[in-house]
Picture: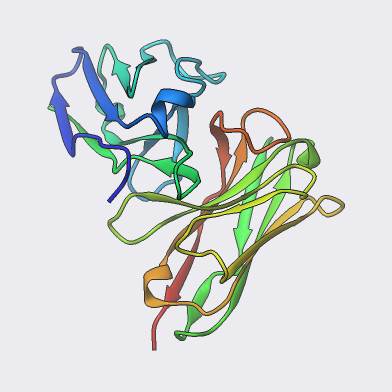
Length: 111
Length: 123
């Protein structure tokens, strides 16, 4: 069970917008940056957002990230069928079990 | 092209050992912290271990502390994970990943991932 909580699944129609939440605590999200990853089953994860809201080169601006307090949110606009994948948030955990942590993952279905 | 290529996975009996390797190319390897992340069948991502660019600082998840050892050879642009006392719950695809920013292990995100190598622990 992860210290970062994500909804197991979200869905939306093509062209619509969807948000995926990542809930943590004062020992992780509140005091550390958040990143987001996309993983199509059977392939390696891909970095979408780092440092809460920055996009690596090549990531379209349809993907956005934000953080407030102990929670972070990934937003995806103009949904495409190719966006159907698992999405993970990640950050640093500063409690007794120090280290990098991921959320449990959210399956995005584009209807 | 920036690339990471893992190798060394396979089938091993409980209590056995394996050494994973991750060959890096296309970037200045010593300038970036590196990590191992694993994914058990049908499960989510789990961070396993990390190391600073110089190799001076190492970090481990509680689940592998005392059993796994991360290291790097900056002269060979290669990252390693020595896995001892393997358990069934260590069965997973193991990915190596490069930090997007910096030589220290401060977290920003991991921007380059290998294709993964599969470790199966079973008798």
